Amino acid sequence: MEPGRCPRQKPTKVALAEKIELTEKQMIVSKNRGQSKALLEGNFVAYQYGDGIAMHGGTSMELHDSNIVSSAPSSLILTLLLEGQLSFGYDELQFELDANVTPKAVLVNLARPAHFRRAIRKGNPVRKINVMFKPDWVRERADKHSEMLRLLSTHQAHMKIHVNEKVLTIANQLVEAGTPETFGEKLAVESLIHQLALHVLSELEMSEMQTGENAVPETASRLNPTVENIVGHIETQLQQPLTLESLASEFAISVSKLQRLFKANLDLTVQGYVRQRRLEIARQQLERGLVGITEAAYEAGYQHPSNFTAAFRREFGVSPKALLSKK
Image (cartoon, rainbow, N blue to C red; front, side, top):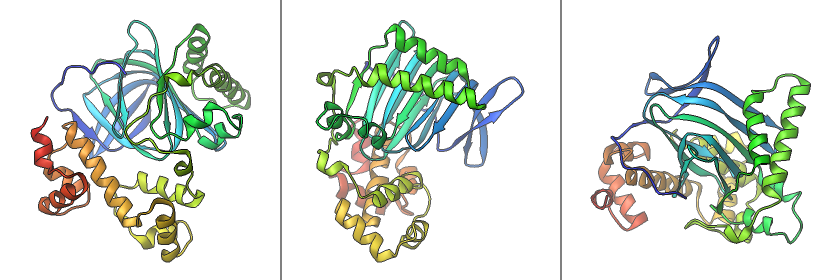
């Protein structure tokens, strides 16, 4: 990971964004607290096939200083930056890529869903491709005792990827292909993604693998499929009210079975998991100056900052105020 940039004025935090199609261009527009603002303008590509691979990227210009926050599912994520600068992270991991001299790439494994954030900086041109491989798609193709399985079993394992001429050519072809619509276009894009996987995933040097603070052993990384799906759903709904009844109904199981599954797989109740993740996200956002204590409390589901402060101290051994004073 490269050194971070100098701090700037606190930008707007955006919890939701959508793509708007215009006649000659596309825009990513924020949908935050009833207000809309164009964040990026350019030509975007997105494609998902089967349950194994999703790809998105394109060429764009960033229009306003903002921070996009969302959730990333369990996946092996390849980020290829061909032009511009890219500041993004998953939970406590942070990456600062600068491709103004040479293209940069990083591979990150999420053994469980994580909080995703990306900084947008006005005037920054970005040309990039992201490919998300579902763990089972990779695992089905990996040798039984391969180092790839070690990578997949380690949450927040990551490594820099050398962008050689072949990888660069494929990435540019994906950007220029646009979102496929016809049968032939879809096959062509799928072929390019598979070629990219071949050149990147089959030549990894595991000795260069780094791990985050929350690395997990292989035996702990495989959740019950139902629990994995529920956790993924929860991660996308953390800013919404969540009840045991609504979750049980969503996945057609009883509340008691829902609780038993969570306790057996995560050693937490559902409410405990939701509370832990909301507090963790609040901590990350406080550390990065994206929110104040009152806003962090509200987003974590607490109506009163005092209750938030007490829960925060129990979870992390420090108060939100003390955490801010260390910045």
